[in-house]
Image (cartoon, rainbow, N blue to C red; front, top):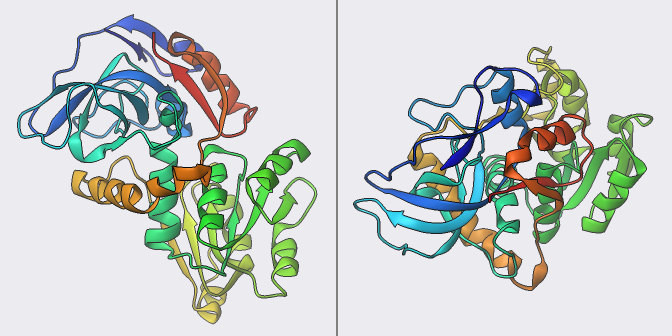
Length: 326
């Protein structure tokens, strides 16, 4: 088969479409013939040499895919060759075939085509596990989503609205904010010329956000805590704004607030399987009737993954960039 390899860390040009050995499913694993994968910022960090795959994972980038089951490893039940699926991966999605633990497989949801389903596993599992399983967003509460037009952001808007929450988003252009509004966002903040702390307080009558989903890390830490409501929950999922910040414990104590930080890729298999099972139970029914849908900016051949990385690095997209297998 062919896969995107990274002979040496570097820029997008370091991604090489090359012939590699076919993977073989082991105990409890499924071999998937890949239809599409999607570009995530973790893939970019891996390409740059900053985010190695977990031990035992595929060395190729790609944290999600869609495709058809090609073979079952020993001990796998509930799936059959030919099933259309999408999958949460620890790596290997930028390839014609990938091996997946059976607990990380999902059926393609109703109303979504096979290629479009590649835009779902990583973002849905990230949003559901952080916003709902950890931060426990409830109907009537306010969610602040930084980077509302990203793949994570576009899914967070839809899921929060589906459960009856108010959604505030930040983004850097009028076009991106307009797309967030189309998905259901209630309050739109251009972070380039508006203070999101003041805007959140204004939109909530001075209360603040009950839950904040943050991809920036250190740069936004202090202001995020300021923007939290009493009993608020800050969920950090990225470090685009740096790794080290100063946390005002006094403000946190006064608000009886909580800060959590999680990653998905390196979690144990049983934790990933639990998240995937929760997503199948709670999120997959929302696709019926189009209440939730994947947001895809563009598609390109997987062999041109370098261009996909350039688009995402420049933040020139809304939603997901898909890589289509041959």
